[in-house]
Image 1 (tube, rainbow, N blue to C red):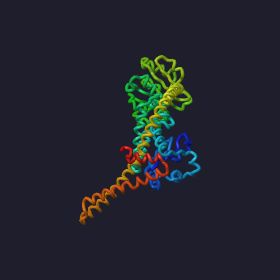
Image 2: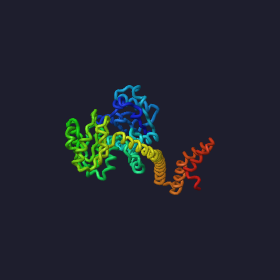
Image 3: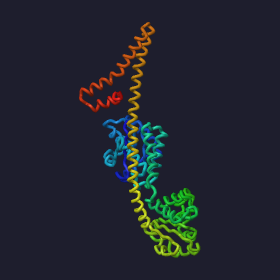
Length: 420
């Protein structure tokens, strides 16, 4: 049995190729069945995200294993080997174990330490479980990788600092307001960044969330997901005073929120503080807003400074995380090697039991036919001893005659000769 990992990711392939090699949720079951029908495959997991497509496999290793797996992947996605092979990477045994543990822990992600990948790995594993495409070694590997990822999160600071614009914006808001459950939030725009911000804020249970967008229809789906209200951009002026936090990210060429609008809102709020986070480029909020009392204005450049600082902290934590992965990978491979010993012990015991049963049956038959009991038992013991020591004796003689002292010592130790 050999553990194998094969795939492409954001480091090796452009999105134009990655999108051709993805396995959609609708086709994943069929893909697993097709993969498992390959002659060498004993178990498999397919991990497919926007940044990577990877096959984790337990296979019968031979010289053509890699070529057969690449051939299957190309045929399944109707790609030429030339188009795909230059972007592929593959790992075997300890390297495959190490790679999966790094992926699950966020050490191989586009954003170092991002937590979403662990959920994606768990989902891929659950899919293989559901379709019964796992064997013992592969199932044990994934369960171990989940515990390693948890250990990395617990024992290092790799996930504690914001390293995305959306996460940094929410972290900043949480630092300024003691309790998010008491604040009202106005989100301006409905693009990808605002979607991420809305989900983060929903997780922290803000009091109320309003999404302002040029058209209601585009924002309504997100609003339904995070239980927010939708308004249009012209309505911001009359609703701004109710917001404690305003996070804006649109594609507007001109500012949406001006100094005069904020001054009116502050007056209506009786100068209660307001936090503005402007993620847009060009800016959605006039820079002069930052000069007003009781207003805290942060731009995307301010967030990038936070992100750069936090990235350096994550990189330091990643060194510690890599040590954990190396240690746990070595432990897992020790378990894998022990499994071959288990089968050898089982085979050896079965052989010895077979010899014993055959000789006992012969001895009992002799006694039934009137043979002397004591002589028969002595003969049984003599023959059983000779049969059991025959193979070890030949191995000892071979090691001694060839001058292989290391092998001779191993045999002596395994036979317990040095204990007497």
